Length: 204
Image (cartoon, one colour):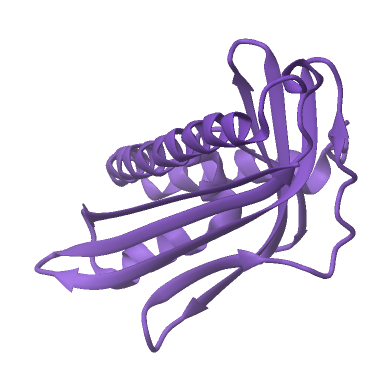
């Protein structure tokens, strides 16, 4: 097995007050699409989700890590917590010649602080999992495989964090330029496939 644990922490300014910022990021089912490499698999409830981390590494291996999440906002500390949800059945670890799938654990924390007319956001994320060793790497020493996997994970987690910050700020600015009616229509269009459409297939 390969143990991976990637962490990223960044502080950035969001162009709105704390109340608006916390409401924007608190709509987690919607802002999931701003996270690079993260796809929504299922919404159990408005504050509980199953997501999939999906990447192609070394141009060969498809890595799928399934994470169950619980979202909670603490108004006293003005902190949005995303923590693992443990009451759902984990996926079974699988490995093929060019893919691997495993259960993982995704955590994030966003602390909102007033900064003039803007909000300072202290944003941190963590992804960890135990992955089966790919067949093509069986002859490679475990410590070498572990280091390669860890380096890739750290790079990907920083990529997720930076991409999320950039995409979410850009979306908010574009949303602020649209009329309320346009924003409502867009939100309904995004929600319809989840609410009324077919249920997402479980990843294999």
